[in-house]
Image (tube, one colour):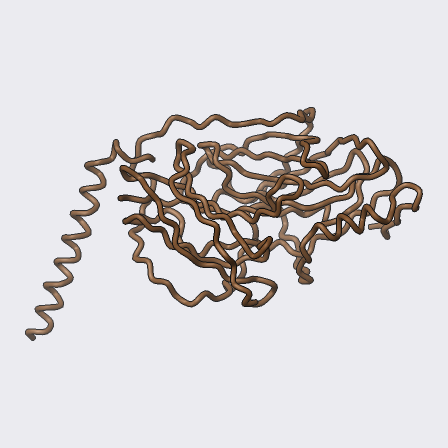
Length: 345
């Protein structure tokens, strides 16, 4: 009986402490920052073999798994605006006050041995076509599924579709918006018009999503061969799983202290490294680290990564944890995944 009384007393104390913590957050509310025909190969006179060999050497080896394409769950979005080959930046919005609609979970972080998620999650950006190292002529069509943001808020999202040449120059860019509250995946279809100066050029197609504060929340790419003329060859995608999975921290959790624990698995790790950056809603960098990726293969080409990222904030702030695979080619970025969490000193 005495032991049961002690347990009841401890439960009461935990409930009291949790309630006090929530009251403290509310009292300081205004201070929160906040995806046929048989392929026809290109004649030698139009595409020197060295172009494809160079492009192939520039790309990391892919995964052999083939998975079915999930059906679209919303009305297709057809984009027809004129390409604008200029850098487009979305200015950050004013920092809104924190409101109870932004759900916070108290995170008690415990580092556990990393394992491969089962089932594997699909990518937030699923590039269906064209597949890696497809040969395309102008214009060519792209198909992709765009999943809703992975958080608890029905926020507006912006998307960029960009095409970069072999020297990193921007050839084409389209910008469009997904309205707040739209449910299910968006099926994106779009025609890309381009020009190349020679017979062929290696290029990178990039699709990225930006949150309501202008921060990149997800980015996916595929490398192509642009032809000035000839017959296109569209290759199939390898699979639609997320290539870079963040397992810690969990989205919309509260983290206290001055160090953030990062854990996950990736199929992209140029030079066995990933860049971790912590960016607040005003666009400020509050922490960063270059993290080494383990050589251990957990299956399907995924390798684990984990580490600690020091950060500095004066007051409680919402920050986006960006994990980036940088290869220094074309746009410089191969893949990016992120989560948003609340950190407190």
